[in-house]
Length: 233
Image (cartoon, rainbow, N blue to C red):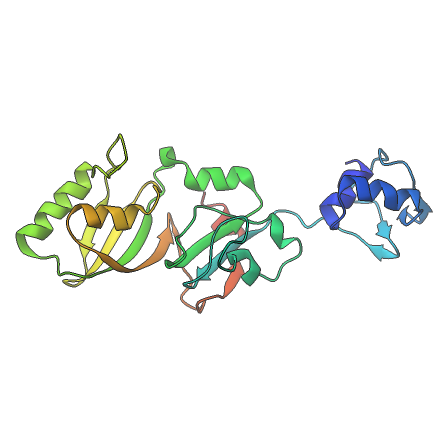
């Protein structure tokens, strides 16, 4: 890896600022001042900036129990960002693996591994996402049977040219649903229930594929995934 890229990967420096730091003789490799940004370094190199040793962070994979009132977007708007809840170096590089609405709670995955993120979110892999849905009106009897069939066949949402992919609906109680989706359209769960004349009052994601939200994580808490969990995708 080039030295200037190494500096941008391990510090807050841009490539331009990294070159200026080298010009000011602030950067050393294996104890020697280096001013050439094209100098090659590897995992055995000892690179320091202003006397502080630098090390590559590597790829990270995080599970978060998202609370309500937090955004999954890359840029902050009206609400705090999910990555602001995570105490890791260079947290700004973490991206949500599929987003949840501001008022939706539950499992969010974050990573700086783009290929892994694609594997998790690609519809072709049929990675089911399970949601717990609190409904305003009871869904029972014939109305429930029609909803199960309609969700399984695909629902035509307003403003969409194609219906949704088949989804699996199970009622835990008359107003508590479990819905499994294999895609992620904008406000999809809320729009699907609106299409059958009901209203979603609360929404919580419980799992993504084989990964189930760790019950030990309180809202706002997070942990890094194990190697075995990462390898499931």
